[in-house]
Length: 303
Image (cartoon, rainbow, N blue to C red; front, side):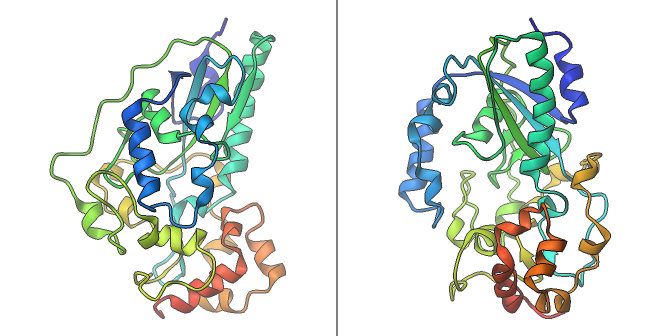
């Protein structure tokens, strides 16, 4: 029996949450994903093709799984970098979301376990082979926009997702049936690499987020102009009208430090491994490593 689940989720910092029944992914959604992989849109991210039996059915993650609790956590920044700074994606402004969201969901599991000591739980924060946006739609959190971002109605796309797969049988939420405004294609037109297709899929091979974070080695000769972007790209989010009503996050760990906001090109260019580790301790930026930042800096437009 579960009491005050709304209170538990709100106390954990969730902006929005819902429940989906743990079941096999719908055939249409699965075929769409398989087609995306076959076409090579995942670029060098081979890990996205692994564990298909788990991605297709989350019950393979946890024996006896019956429900998936999906939660969205707001990271929309109140304070942004100045225009002359090397631009980092908003999601990397603060502490690594893997740590923060997991800590939040551990609070939820602790509360649920106290009420249901025989139940089992598995926390997932972009670390398990789950089709996160698919389950977020099923749980009524939001819908997938034309830019392939999960859009939370009334807030926008600046949210992290986290899931709890559990053996508890919970009442499923109504799936979200909303979609982007008819005829809006701002994200498609604004994308620097023209990576966004009209069917809400992304070709990572020409996406600046992939190229500046996940890609290893020299940037391709035909890579899109990064402008002032050194880590990631928020262009499709910045131009999206559905982000106009987003409120700043109230999660302290997602707020940028003064040392981060003060970074300039010369700070990156002269950064030592120790300095990189100090500035980006517990940061998602470590994904690109110092070598990646220096490579991206060399490709950026000068101030």
